[in-house]
Length: 105
Length: 142
Length: 102
Image (tube, rainbow over all chains, first blue to last red; front, side, top):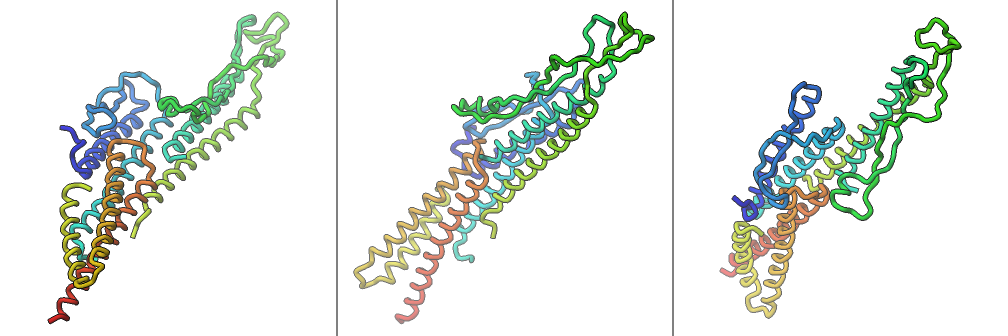
């Protein structure tokens, strides 16, 4: 299902779900840095980057060595994205509510 | 400069300090490593830090990419080993001299302390960046 | 602006338009009220459209600066509030006028 035509609210909601999943992947990769036999994970997107779409957790077979600092940066960046989306969505919903109920306030 | 780039920069700084720490601790651990005469012993390493284009700048193909520090551990050249007269040592040469790596204990300890402080400073910088972003989200609060 | 919002905003405009028409009965400047409303609605459409654009960019994972996003959204909110205040005042004045004429 293409989300491009869906409402802005649905798009942001989907993007926040993806961000949540990304967070779980980041947390797992950080916690298991020293675990023997642990396979690092990453997210795989079904659609191109320009379209918000579904993402699945897959094993990261790239074998690119990622330092702890890089993992922490990825987690911080994802967190900032999530916070911005949450706050922006809240503001937008307030605007919609104001238009729908113009006599209040 | 945006928040994501700022965090990337701090992360590069942290990685560099970690490399300096690694070099210093490696040298300290090998201060008294000896080898049979004639074979190369332990060579002290230095963390050489270069400015390289940032990963995200290369990804976007920017013409003037942001330069980030990157460290590489390089064995020192021209360092004269410390020789000590120990005739009974298994690795002593014909004259009874044993070579120890040219590691300056005080210098390495200094590097350890400065690397730790600089690492903490980069972590503080990341915290500040996150606080900036959080404050930006408060724009328009009633 | 999204279809749902457009419908609601259109109702607000038509209510205000009736009020504006009623208030300026007999005056030659009937068009002025309607023009002000129209231009305010245009601004609102632009600003809310920009806000929705920012949200789409965020959802698509584009690097949007948090402060820019918040400022765009705040501008849209102020635009909406201003328009609604103008509309409310017009409707209120029209109702006052209707009461007085009898």
